[in-house]
Length: 332
Figure 1 (tube, rainbow, N blue to C red):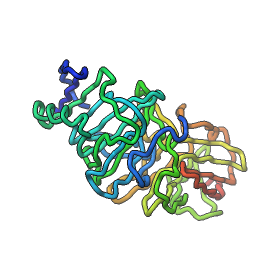
Figure 2 (figure 1 turned 135 degrees about the horizontal axis):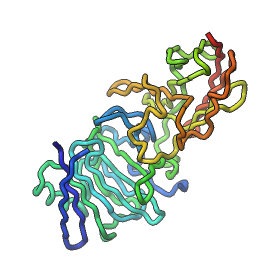
Figure 3 (figure 1 turned 30 degrees about the vertical axis):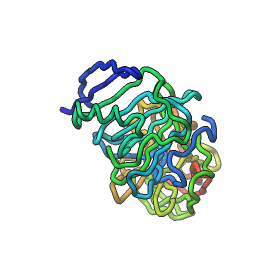
Figure 4 (figure 1 turned 90 degrees about the vertical axis):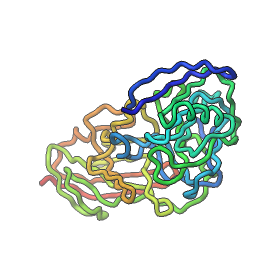
């Protein structure tokens, strides 16, 4: 069984406590962790890697398929945690606490910056390839905004080198969309657009055709849409979806923050036909729910018992792109 080693660390003197356990919002506040980059994966996308399906809790920035690219602190802060781990989901990770109350997390690192690298090397010599988590009980190890905190890699679940970046609250109970905190004008401009590839009506898949008519079964329509933002030939997740029946808003979802306790519950958002492999990403967003979810703002689909519907779906992303998609439904 894999083991973790948790270490509590006082700077500048070590006090090591070893506990062996079984494994298991303001705009523009933060700088992008990679200079002149673009986004390759967005917040709350579906992931099937690791031990179980889960949400992507941050944003990925391109390092142009290169290891060793400088990863920089998003804001002045101090180190609260290092995770030394070649495997797992996150791989080598550093977490900073900031005065604005948020924490930022940087994962999949090839190696750490010199300020922390000597600690990492010492612990690797002691514990080998075991997963080691270092908690810092003081604020002595500081980084300034834009200072290098590590170098891009593909540790953890990463198949290609990139920078994984998260924003959490101080207690790490919530994760927030990092792009809400970044001036998007600082990212590399890339051609983008919103699209729908397929739709699921009562679990039956159809190719989406604008204005087409589809048949549903059951008490009310259960619609899922294969939606995406296309960026540089890469498919990204969307941010917000509104569903209208005869111009009345019946479902509204905004994927901007999530309690970490829902990390392994992606099917609250995605239909089970959602597929993620190294080559294929098909994300079917459910436009209905029987749960009380914090990111679902309107949930009235089940109130409607009609036999025919004029359907309109509005989809937008964090970058300001939007699309409107229409069709009709009849009960079969």
